[in-house]
Image (cartoon, rainbow, N blue to C red; front, side):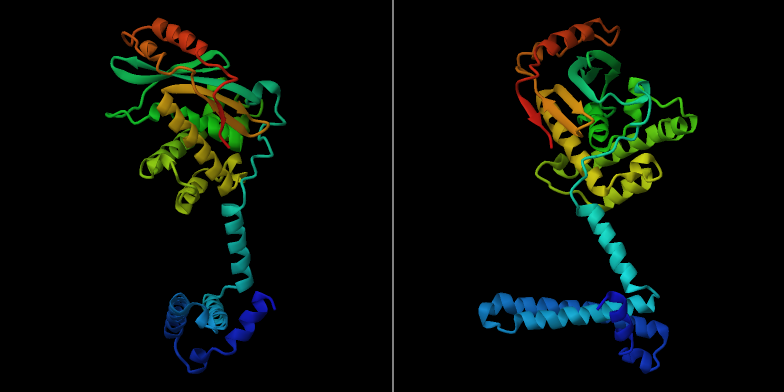
Length: 334
């Protein structure tokens, strides 16, 4: 028997309709019935916990209570003019997207683009922490080339947001998506004006930054995701509503969760080591963190006399870069 057939047959036994109750009263009866049967199911389980194997009819009682729950569920669906088949199909799609294993991004959104408009498939990104006017800042280089200006936390109290670019890298590795990284690396798809405007333009970049800020605030209230194996469904739904109209909308909620977890696993190591090297393989959907051999030994270089000029920062990058041994201390994240 399928759900639709059951729903039709169950509706014929609706005594509230036969008794001539108005729509509101009939609906309330069905809704209360759902709650009542859920309580009965809990009551049977309480007896099972109390009596153990002596409760011989436990499975029969559970079967009965689940059947009653199904009847009320079908009845409520009928009163809302919903097809139970459609409800089941929608729910299955929802839980599969949420809980099926992340697809590890088998596709690349820019695979058909010319080389100059594709994200680099392999990248080494070095994060080095410095002090400028007494405040911690981060310098970033990609494949040996300095990118942008030193980043701070943009907060009264340091909170580690200066390392937030690791999240852009995680999105790129796991989802194949990061309009901000495209802009930084000058890999925007300018040969396709509409695509460039919508997917690589300012609005998409702002949305990505908003996702980073949103997840960071969420993580702050959850130990920065240390020891946590799932994030709230509501957070993932909010992210989907923000960027679902973009190409990344093809990625599942499970993909997003994987990208978030990998990003924060690397971020926590960045904080612990005051920097690090991130290696990315976009083709394989992999992102790897490598710590400096001697973070404590590099501490004396974590100071720049003033915010004027880049000379000291350049010197720091060169010195710290020598402390990284790519073959050692590698830890795959994922």
